Length: 527
Image (cartoon, rainbow, N blue to C red; front, side, top):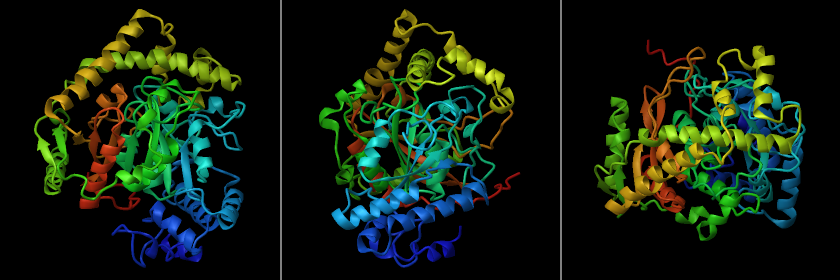
């Protein structure tokens, strides 16, 4: 859909007076650039309604996701979206808005339970006919309570990219291959591929992703958006199809840091169904936007995690410019602030994931019901439906997880202790204590590689493992482009340091403004 289509729907042209961001303000502001505060202000002014906004996004999904470049980032749209939008408009008129997400369309990854007419499948056809979830996931429940409009479910790397080591990121049996909106032959990364691509293409205002190790920050980097993996326990995992409870979390994905902060405020909360959230306590904040400060870098001590530099000379050049921007805004850089090598505990972490995946998934499937209730049954189902589910790559990770025993085994307990200790207390915590740091920075990864269904996704560098294994927060913000492909700058640090990371990331974003709308190129034509 082009901008004229938005004008016809009465959306473009209503947003200029609502926003404060330099890129999205003024009479030329369109839905491609609109922030949550702009959309909210336009609805408050009566120049926009939730129903018209939802209709505009649904039209854009039809134009860009189902037709045109065919991004395949959205698995299904909510058949009740327009009816719910009308109800939210009526409520706004009669009672006022519930909060900053009232009437705002949100897409959620297809591993979050929704007790409605949409499916929850983790992208797998094995769950396409399973009974619907008995209730919403905690995150979805919180979003509905905040007045957000659930617009649909996003595609993902099937089973959150925990099926095969040769998987193609963004591919699922149910949804096919998600495309990177910046260049359609490029890997969108995973596993929250659809959420990142949909946010980048402005198919929604904001989206929810999930991460075990890299699944929010990596696709955010590849698609040029903001992604935040929270501290494990800040956001409940209840009702989310799991990989590993020691590392899993849901998190916000957005076009701006402010929008991510708004979404995080709605998602975070204590939940008796997720014991990890009992640790959040005083760390919970209903409004994370209060920490955003364009001068937030002034006086901050930021360590350079140099072990994650050097994978790509063009990315290193962007990092050099980013570091200069940090210094120009008043940050003090500590160089280097080296973490121990992630390779020292990455294998232990992988073994933990195999053990926990088997235990956690089988517990979920047992509650859900249906024909597939165990990991062994899932493996057998895939084999029986190999044409649909195994056309490109296998299920070697599922088979490896099936071979694991219970969570009482000594091998699991030792691997868990080693991974947590080396990534957290002896890793991130130790280097931050040593240098009195507020955060660590590194390139999130390199520009997206080509989609390769034969050999699977190619590694392009990543700094996700330390924060993922420790269960600590990690924020990525657009840092620039390499041959038209976006890359991100990562800020990560101690447990519960979301306010600090958001403050730093926001100040960097405001100083540099690197995010730009995708061009939907068929190919970069570099060969």
